[in-house]
Length: 300
Image (cartoon, rainbow, N blue to C red; front, top):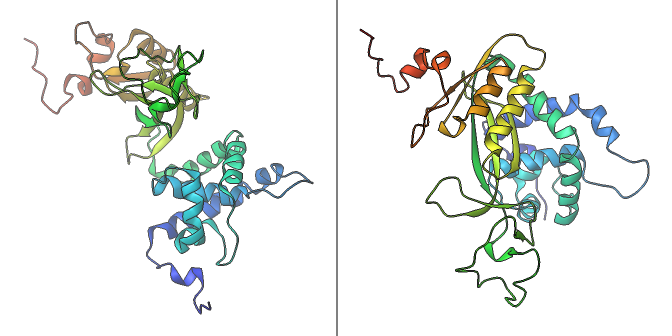
């Protein structure tokens, strides 16, 4: 088959991925020296980090659920080939090779340096004083059937499908396909899933992500991750910043820790069957007294 059009010509000039590709290329050029350190002088050729990071961006943008599906789409999707940097006839990697290289890359500092460099490009659009933090449930690519007893006491159930009525917990069970995934539910009354927790610190001017991380799912992870991101944000700074959060962050330890970091926490009060941990040092602020734009009642 012959084609008179290049991949570059096939992508519309106003396609959103063009601006992202330009920004990405600028950042990747700045990290070229770091990428060189990832290569050994001998051995098999691997997936170039530049290709890997562009491909992972596509996976996030288009909600592609696995590396197998991602590699498959890069193979036949001309837009994806162009964005990653592959030519029309270039061979695409095996999905297992891609996954192995992804683990090596994302376990290094390069992925964080990439995110930091992107943040630097967007710094003029971002607030440096006011933030919001939140967590979200990320379902693992693992089924309930894979959640088996650690001591093999359920070995008589060959496919793991007959778990109804059984008491299962993270202490006694783990997934055979994704051991790091935890059985977790975000709120009472909801179904439990094998999952992780994603955490984002968002600046309040334009809603851009200033920091992000993924952790195992448990009842403390949201607050612990928030404190780690705030600690990193405050490193080398003396000026106080603010952070908004929902009622899941209204705990004594979190409020005390944010104050120690020189951070004012504007947290939704959790007064369901308990007292809020916010005192007058925080609630005296207008943003707390009027959380929904309703003027606070003036005191007599």
